[in-house]
Image: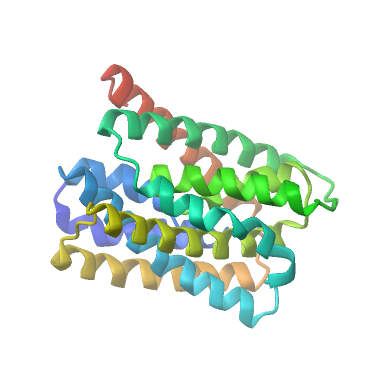
Length: 251
């Protein structure tokens, strides 16, 4: 497939993921790996696009008063510095994609369970639990090169921390701050690399897609079907990465 098709593909990815509060970094990484050869360029590009998409979602959630900083700051206190440190780790391309693939398979399973739940309950978390969970996911997001919301959101839904829309707003802001921290980490490590001609086209595509998806999410559309499709996509991408980079099998 010609690289000229990338903006169109990324438009739909951004629309799809932003509708459930994610940035799409996992799919950006997987697809970019098919077109680009520079491993660090792939990570840097995915993080930049992540920031573009979730910035729109964050503004939407704040504007509609869904986001509440008092509820969310404990998740971010340790996630930001650990995402920064995780991004500076120098991993081989094979190890990187195996870690990412394993995490995505688990996320896909958690997402499926989330949308199969019939009763929504809310449970209070102590701040130490929020510190630990946020820090762990922040480190994983820095290593994997994505914002981490796709890891945090399913876990919070399974643990019934809050209703799905509040969790989606947390995921959006969580991805934003950790993606910025990861990008800074790449700069400090000297591994930030971007093709500016390509990134300009992709930014336009994801901003348009992310705007539409965030609008659908903030307007309380029924997102269960999209959520299940997202879970299937995340699981498939994770399985594909493991089979390809671990066993050399293409699916």
